[in-house]
Length: 130
Image (cartoon, rainbow, N blue to C red; front, top):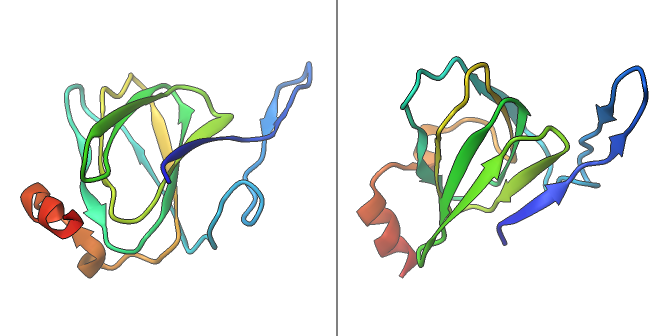
């Protein structure tokens, strides 16, 4: 189930700290970590679904929107803080857009990269979800 997951936030006058731990906040074994940055204005990222890979996305810096479709409807989540993120189960169409200047999205994934995992045709995705 798609959900926002709050991360522990340790407040300190010297600067705050947040933590992501496999098995605590993240409901899957982390196999890959990647980040998206320097996205030109107006560009989209994602626009695909993953067959069996789960992901967790955090805005480490700046802000962006994550548009998710579960096969029935679109939902928009605005990520703009580094102490929470969005859990995306497999077979969920995702598009990231509206990146602010100097935004940084970090993505934790349950599987290593495999092009065969990707569904890049939205109509085909909808057929699979029926």
